[in-house]
Length: 106
Image 1 (cartoon, rainbow, N blue to C red):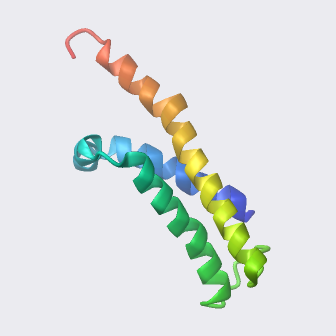
Image 2 (image 1 turned 90 degrees about the vertical axis):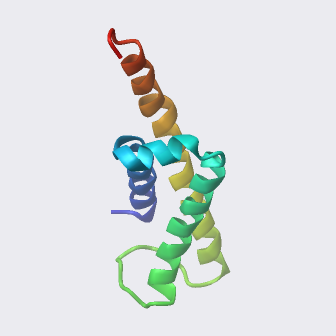
């Protein structure tokens, strides 16, 4: 599994879970800074992968460099995670909300 795929899956799952878990969904719906929060979480995911490989010396069998290029790669991974979460919301979750709201008796 590549680092890009892992961060993409984390972004997708985060977006889905924030809209599915009942109490979390209610608080998330009221939160004003959703995209900024997701971007911050994505930076934590990308930076976390870099930290696990470079600082914790965890062998994750991924190609992450522990130099300045590795930090740039971590930021790229953060972008992949963020785009995955936002695309999942736009394509899947938001449409699901529209379908549920159009059901009779809802």
